[in-house]
Length: 306
Image (cartoon, rainbow, N blue to C red):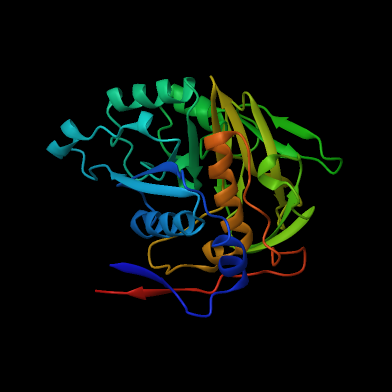
């Protein structure tokens, strides 16, 4: 089991910023996990810890069955409507026969249409390519080139559409320290520097989908091709809000990687979740937020218990 704990000498991010922001009525968040080709258990635990340490959120986890024939599917019915935000941390790319039950899919569709918030956490945008409404919710995801358009950002900051069938299917190269460029101002990135660096990020290239009702928040440049690819985007779905990002990779065998310890990532996670819940952001920018030339990491440790 992975257990997170804080040192007594807590860094500025958690000491000066996080614990200072106390809310009596916390926003309710549900993480949905249970199956993925990534380390979904550790991912959920770390995300829950980051959000709850902000003092803005109360976080529950609903774990779906991981096997297709598991009879537990009959009773797995997460109550989306009881939460301000749902964080989607399931991914069936390793076995596309594993799907949320149709009744659960319909409940998610209704939840979003009526004004819910959905956070698509990294590889969750690999999931459910045959679920039409899900493709509309996420805007772009890990898809074949025949399954949607891709978006690029040119040197002038204009979004360029790559048609269906042109270019490549979604892929990524090696993980690198990436400079994140802010494209559109938004409550999530209010007061962010125009450029900031995050460590060991997996940049998705040719993420594809319907790309409807979408706003690109940020992008990074692919060092191999010099093409700018979206990193974060938000989507409107009915009255609901969706946030989708390629940040947040945590592979099997990783232990609380730098990409999750990044103060920029953790700030974005907290702010995006608050915005999904309320349409506003109160969470202040940490004084040690990363810059274009400087990565900043949270001083949070992990203890592994077998």
